[in-house]
Image (cartoon, rainbow, N blue to C red; front, side, top):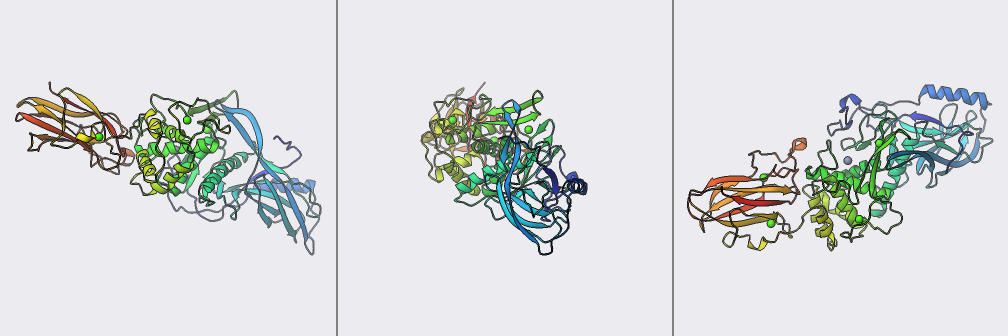
Length: 577
Ligand SMILES: [Ca+2]
Ligand SMILES: [Ca+2]
Ligand SMILES: [Ca+2]
Ligand SMILES: [Ca+2]
Ligand SMILES: [Zn+2]
């Protein structure tokens, strides 16, 4: 739908906040990310008024075209109705297409305002089609207009607002032309254009409305709490969710503007929902989609964000537009079906692998409303939809010790969700939530013997979620040199090994947690070690003091940092030169 707005006057104003806090000086924030977790939680609020310059410019225009004739003694009652829209920028996987469409501004506050003194004569909201109708009485000077604010009406079941920045904390408002209450035009339609700088604010609200409505549906009508988004043209204040402020921030810079990036907007809202309705332990910080050694908490948090965004936007890929309209357009694009970077998007410690797994559990390849660029692979037989995933997200993860993919799986089992077909989906991303084939021999007296020089792949995982111990035996010769080690740690494994001698005396003769001797605090924050193949692996070299059977016990380290996985896989090797 494209509308000719040349006959309408729509004027963008930023209006002051309502004194409910949230302001802060930008100087306290990290300039590159804009909203690190250190941001102040209760900053000082500075109120502001409608821009005087804009107001005066408009007043001058109004007086030239619709002379004000003076006040009515008794007041004049009238009804005004119409439709309010915003201009949406279309994008593809290549960036902005240059096309725009007009979309309804849904569920936002609408007011009838007296021109002479700014008095609000009536308040209401647009409906799902962007329509509004309000009765009002003007007892003051002639002349009113209608305006829509970038804020939902409190009585509705959607709670959202967009403001310009933390310092000014202003809502956006778009207003109609000026008219006289004695001759109300019908309809009074107006809209928020891209060029005015206000269209983007209403696009943010539009995609967040979709997300909020789905959450309400999943929660039997209970809407998520109020979310504030901060965005303005030119903002370089990062794109992120700030848990201290309960707010999302979106970039407005020319080289990467995010107010029309529906995927990015919903991703950030996904972080808000994790914080409010689930659990989020991510330390934040920079991250890349092809890093398979991520902090398991970050991988979960970001993977959830991409997945939730794809669900809301009904497509199995994610786009972040860069640049402007063609020919200066560009985009960052990746698939979560497939997924992109398939050889690197592996393990529970990769955000794209987490997104891919959740998507495959959810997706229905025959659903015509979902767009994708990748075929459905044969290993994916599940079409479980959002409901079981949401249950685990909101009912199991809040009580988990840490929100990670492993905890999601544990919650999935605890809530009795269906397990058939899950293993193939996990295994496609080399996520190994299964017992290895040797668990039955994992006791000291009966440990299975392996030959020196052998290596074997094991998982630190028991299907009852108890702590796994992997135990093997080997024959050692007195005065010979041996090395016992774990290698190729994946899925967030953090091994510790103990070596016992000899035969049935079980004397501890060696121990190793991390091969480099490093220890990491549980709450390692942004200084957590990467979940690389060797970082948290174990290695112990020793000389046998007597002939006989030696035993190696491998467990998950009791001093694993929070960044490690709930489970994990590794390769055990015993060598002697
Ligand atoms: Ca962008
Ligand atoms: Ca799929
Ligand atoms: Ca095992
Ligand atoms: Ca270790
Ligand atoms: Zn994120």
